[in-house]
Image (cartoon, rainbow, N blue to C red; front, side):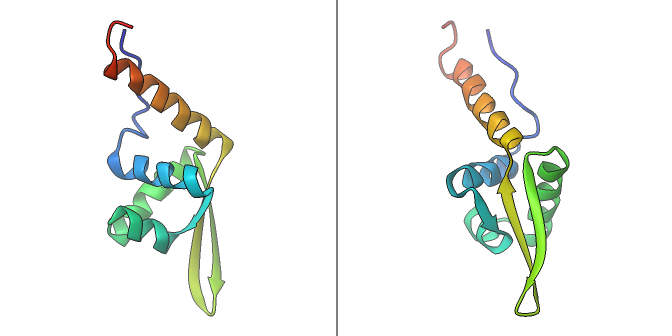
Length: 96
């Protein structure tokens, strides 16, 4: 009846990051930090978890001598997000 929810995406912050990346495809760390309201440390940890799972790709570079971290959703991440949303629907309409 109820379908399993991906525990990695069930975290509010990780789900927020993936949701943002679905809409923009690629985003800088500062954008994600601003939109989620997370601390830099917490966001960094959650981005690492998503990256380790293969849900996002993280690129580190420099812009004007300042570190620049960019995150991009992967095909695997998009598939996991779509499945999560689909499975979540079983909780909204039980018995269907």
